[in-house]
Amino acid sequence: MTRTIDGSIQDGELSGGTAGQVPYQSAPDTTDFTGPGTAGQVLMSTGGSAPTFQTLPSSANIPGGTAGQVVYQSAPSTTTFTGPGTSGQVLTSTGGTAPTFQTLTTVPSANNITGGSAGLVLYQSAPGVTSGAGPGTAGQVLTSNGAAAPTYQNVSLATNASNLSSGTAGQVPYQIAPGSTGFAGPGSAGQYLTSNGTGAPTYTTLVTAPTANSIAAGAANQVLYQSASSTTAFAGPGTSGQILTANGSGVPTFQTLTVVPRATNISGGTVGQLPYQSAVDTTDFVGPGTAGQVLTSNGAAPPSFQTPAASSTQPTYTVFTAGASGTYNSPLGCTYMIVEMIGGGGGGGLNNVPSTCGGGGASATYLKLRIGAGGYTYTVGGGGAAAISGGAFPADGTAGTATGFGLASSFGGGGGGGTGSPGIPGASNSGGYTVLAFVAGVNGAGGAAGTGISSPGGSSFWGNPKPGVTSAQAASVSYGTATGYGTGGTGLTTSFPPSSVSENGAPGRLVITEFY
View 1 (cartoon, rainbow, N blue to C red):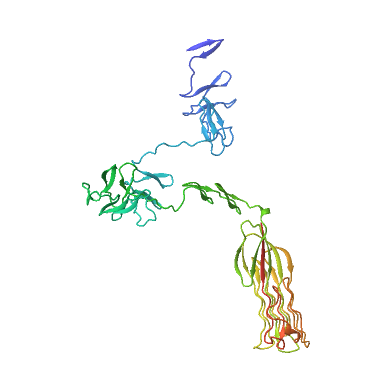
View 2 (view 1 turned 135 degrees about the horizontal axis):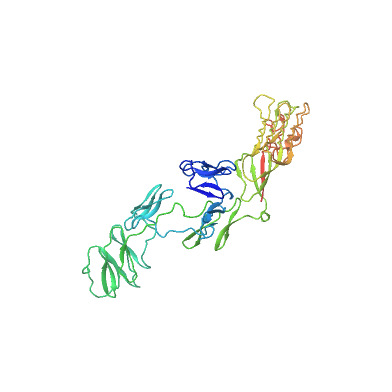
C-alpha cells in the first residue's frame, strides 16, 4: 500500500530487513535496520551512529549505602538502606516502615522440649546436643558417669550412723529385722519398756490385769501401733533396709531412706569466688577480690573482699640468722620491703712464731636494699672458722659464707692468713635492687712481725673486732667468736691463750622490714 502525505510517498510496509530487526533513521528520509539481538538484550543508543542490542552487565554491588548497612524495599522497585546496627543487635521488622537494628532485652524461652519420654532427664551428650537419660525406677538416684551419659542407680544404705533418721523425742530404736531399725514409744512417766519377743517392744504400765504372750491377728514381721485409744493395729511389714516412719496421727509406714550424695563441686559461682551461708541451708558466693585484698566479715551481712588501709598497718619485721635458708614470701598487703644483709666474717689466722700473729679475718659488706613485695629465695651465711693448730704452720682462717636474698649477695669476709696477711670482703647486686646503703667490709689487720700483738679482724656495720693486745693482756680477753654480725675474727699465735686456735668470724644476718 502506498500513501501520499505532504507530497511524499510513504510506504505502509517497510521493504528489506529480517525478522527481529528494528528500523532506525540512518539519515534524513533514510531508514535502515539494526539487530536482531538475542533474548534478554536491550537496544542501546550509541549517539549519532546505529543503535545496537547489548547485554546488560550483571551488578556485583549496589551503589550507595555505607559499611554494615542492609538493603530493603522502601517502595515497589525502590531499594534503600537501613543500619548499620551495633554488635549483638538483631534486624527487626517494624511493619510497613523501615526495619531497624534493635538490642534484645530478653531471650525467648521454651516451655517444652520436643522428643523424649515421660521421666527422662535432660543432659548434654555433645556441644549443642541435648539428650535424655532414664527414666529410672522409684528410689533410684541420677549418677554421673563422667563424660558418658548419666544413669539412674540404686543407692546402698550406710551400715553405720551417728544419728538415726526419723523417730520422735523419747522413742527407743529397736531392730525389726536384720538391717531394719524401728522405734518404740515414747512411753509416759513410770512406764516400763517391755519385750514382746520378736515383736516390737512396748512401754506398759504395770497393772494387775492379766498379761498376754501374743497379740491376736497380724502377719509375720508386722509392727504394732495404736490406731486409736486402747486399739492396737499393725503396720508393715516393710522390705529389707526400710525404716518405720511416723506419719503424724496417720498409720506409720516403712520407707526407704533417701541417701543424699556428697558434692565434689558446688554449682554456680565464678572463678575466684568463695562460698558462704547467706541463710540456713542456703549457700551463696562472694568475690572474687583483687590481688592483695583480704576477706572481711561484715557480721550477719555477706563478707566482702577489702583492701587493707596502708595507714593502719605498722611495719613488720622478719629476722633470719646464720644457717637459715629457704623461700621468703612477703605478708599479705605488703607493698615493699627494706632488706638488710651481711655475710659471715672471716676466721682469724694462726701462727706458731710468738712474735708474729696470724692475720685477722675480713668483715663482710653490709647491704641495705629496697625490694618489691613477692617471693624470694634466701640464705644466711655463717662466720669463717678460726685456724687451729695441729697441722702445718702458719695456718689460715676460713672465709665466712655469703648471705643472699633474691639476686643480691653479701659475700663472706676472707679468712686471715697465717703469715699475717688479712682477709678480703666483697658483695654483689645483680638484681638491680634500689641500694639505700652500702658499707664495704674491712680487711683484717695484718700480723706485724716481731711485735707480738694480736691482729684484729675487720669491723662491720653490725660489729667491732676485739682490739690488738699482747699475749699477757690476752689472758683477760675471751676469744671464741667475733662480736656482732659479719665481723672478722682475731689473728693469734700459739703463744696466746687459748694457744691452739685463733678466733671464729661473726655469723651473718638478714633483716627484712615489711611496709604496707
